[in-house]
Amino acid sequence: MQQQTISITAIASISPLGTDSKTIWENYLHENHCFTEHVLDHKKTFVATLDANSEQVVSALRESDHKYKSLDKSVLYAIAASRKAIENAGWTQNDVFGINIGSSRGATVLFEKHHQDYLKTGKAQTLASPTTTLGNISSWVAHDLQSSGPEISHSITCSTALHSVLNGMAWLRAGMADKFLVGGSEAPLTDFTIAQMRALKIYSNKEEDYPNRALDLEKKQNTMILGEGAGVCCLEIGATENALAHIVGIGYATEILEHNISISAEATCFQKSMKMALENTELSEVDVIVMHAPGTIKGDLTEYNAIEKVFGKNLPLLTTNKWKIGHTFGASGILSMEFAILMMQHNRFIGVPFAKAQTQTKPIRKVLINAVGFGGNAVSILLSL
Image (cartoon, rainbow, N blue to C red; front, side, top):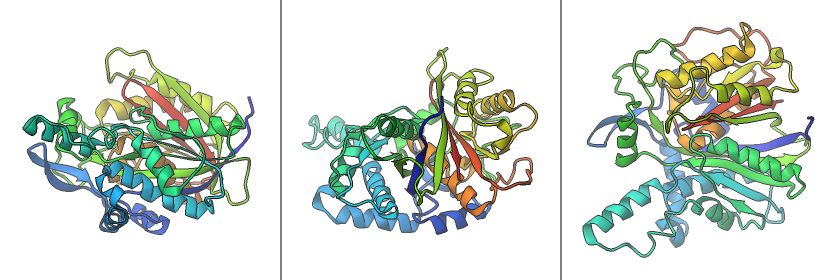
């Protein structure tokens, strides 16, 4: 069924790559990763933290309003990215727009801090509840932007940000809004979060040039690494003149669970979501796929198998950004969308430096983005210039 086009009129992020598109693109052009070692979960751990400029932006934001000093990093990241996005889109307080910004884990830093304080003192602090609820993100972004439209928060693990895009599109196509701010934010670099990933035996312990081996299909151990950041994009109904890209296909699917983090050998959920997103598009028109590819053995391989099932032998160019900035959980999908838009804008494919070399032979005009959460909750979004 042909649906009305959705325009992306701005996209902004705050991450280890920086806060402005020029710097972010320059960082993508370099083959170095953004990981540094920190002591987390009682041992040295690779993570991807915000770059120095992004940290300054967050610090200035925190100090700008006494109410912001008690907010979790995930909320501050979302506010910082949202301010930039609406500025780039030219939206003002006179524009009525909805907000849907989600997170996989929410106020991770504050939740762990408040719980530790409770274990020590036997009392919960006054702001423990309001500052750790998931609804913090969209509601505080709405407060900061003084917006007047609907505000929604949700958590759908690692496909959260792309589900925000789907939800914003649904509001727009239903005629219930003309504009929507959508995305995801994550600040998961805490002791307990790292410990949980280690308990699943998926966290990287590699000491080599590229400790996250996302899209290395021959790796013998899991190499996922966590990163932090937020990304949001401005959606408008129809094909606008100032669009950075258009959303021309969407797909979603969920697998029947065998266990809490299961995904089938050929990622049936990805096959379904990609086919749905591509139902009005010739396969040969897809120039690049930005894969979810978290750096785990099974996660990378099953997604690749699903792509082969859908595209056969004529695969598009394949890439991911998790070897560089790690897995940002609920924010990862929107950062992948930003990566896709930058490649389209600059007409340059950015591959994975240690993966099999791929050669760009035609202009990059259509890019498919994949994301999947624990339990096989997949989303695929097709972008076009």
